[in-house]
Length: 246
Length: 356
Image: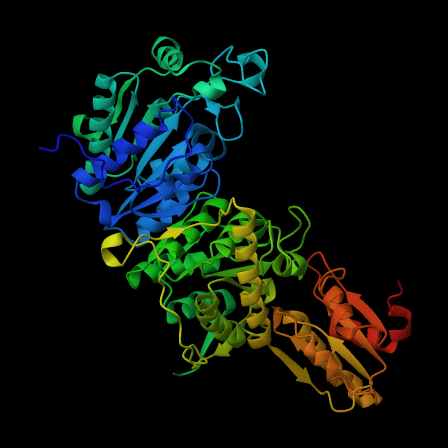
């Protein structure tokens, strides 16, 4: 009896992600959800710029690759003209919270009926570990060598909290992938977000605290511990918006 | 279909509907605001999509998404807004997606002004986006021609999977003329949109809309394939008009509103015994270089007239290949050229000749 099979939601292409990075787990969860909801062949995904730029090679559905930060605008163009398709974006924190914050806020505010998967690892991974708007106080990056200083470099943007103030979004939750329990919770959250889209409820976003051991300069285990001990203090897990409970 | 009196910006909206546009994404900017204003109610009436984006940047990326989904899509904007769209135009060209962009030029640089100009010839034909790509640019001189090129522009965009720009100025947008919306355009067999990401249940295999080629060999192959496509465009889509070119003493080169003004100047010079012809480029890219080979030997020189301080003159110099002296007359910043100024420029041709 088969106990486990690779999801049909992923292609057979080997990913380029670094050892210990949680993008792989997150890809799998999104792909499993699309398969379980039986919408894989009716879905158009949007890859962004950053580590997830090659997401268009990994998700086994039709995909578009968007300019840096513009994934929510590209997704809007697709969803508005093909309203009966499932449309999602997969973006990192540099893409979504920095250069693309405008497109993200306005897609959320319009209640665009899309799902945003937001991997927040508090750093620019693809370009080699520069400071992100989500980096924490004191976090050492290649552009904040002595640690991010809030006084000169600003504060971490809490995207989930910010977007939950808008009337457009239907569901916003922040999850992590540090333990099997958290991974199960993350999958349930992702599924809920896509179900809300299928029910036409409007914009949904799952912010996923993601690890970057290579650019954080720690082991994969230490990276997960840092998410649990430090990141979740600034980025608490939980549901920030749910139109079903308002 | 009967003729009707239409304002340029209204005609643009109606021509797009006539051409079967599925969606419009744009952002307010003077002097093209009537285009989205008309479309904001016309498109929903036709069961199509209108969306006012949060910025020009978002609007052009919405165009990318919708075009990638196989739809007939357009945006319109003006100088400052087109500047913001350049990144998206490069991506659309790179991903080989069709779309129609209406650019209504105003004075620049920077915030410039809101009066008509032709100061965005470089922006339209050279672009500010990165990489080896071209935008097919048509510059009509009347509202009827604008209507015809909007309708044909959608087909040309689909045929070559490339952005097409309709480049006009505030004059054409704001004036009214008697026009016909339903004039037939050239019939083309358009390729199926087999690139469109519409969900794998609707087609074989998996489709990806993309402009990323990290492997240098693959990227160069992509560049060469696009170059081959642009060579076909250059062969098939050059448009120009030759006016009074039998035995000209001088030849004016002007496009759009300037060309119309020059028509009056040409008439006013005839009683003085000065015969002036005109090459009116309609496609600015590809530029009608071949027209310059047809200039009769009677011509003593070329006068380039633009509502700018000299942009198209670069292409005229390339096309002229050093054969005839070239003079320039231009006004800018929103000042519209008077026919008498063009007349004076011809009378003082020698003083206006450009020297390197």
